[in-house]
Image 1 (cartoon, helix red, strand yellow):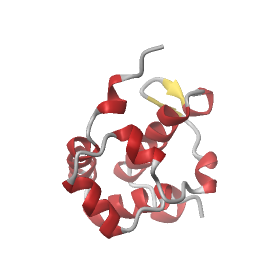
Image 2: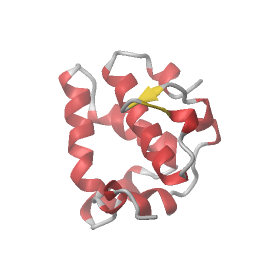
Image 3: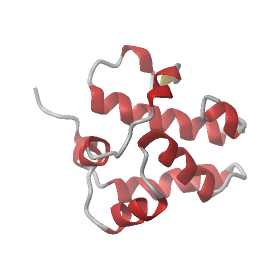
Image 4: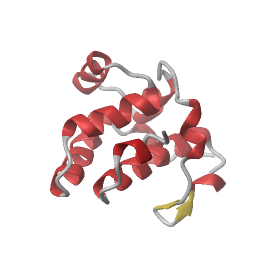
Length: 116
């Protein structure tokens, strides 16, 4: 089975879109970074290094220091697909991040986004 093309996309090429989506709705880059750190365990320094290098989405999630065990609490539909039904691990991780950024842009409080 061929991998989805997003797996080979550089994380740094999509990251500005996450920031723009959040900022258009009055949210901040720092909040986006907090979400990414919560989900993956990357520190801000590690995230900066990833953004400077040619790290693709698949590597970004496969090398994540500590995927948050609470990420399984992320439920709902993203891109027309129910997250809970995504079987492929990397795609599910990507969609978790998409869902969290959507929640941020929709004005949810950070405590709810971070499943506290």
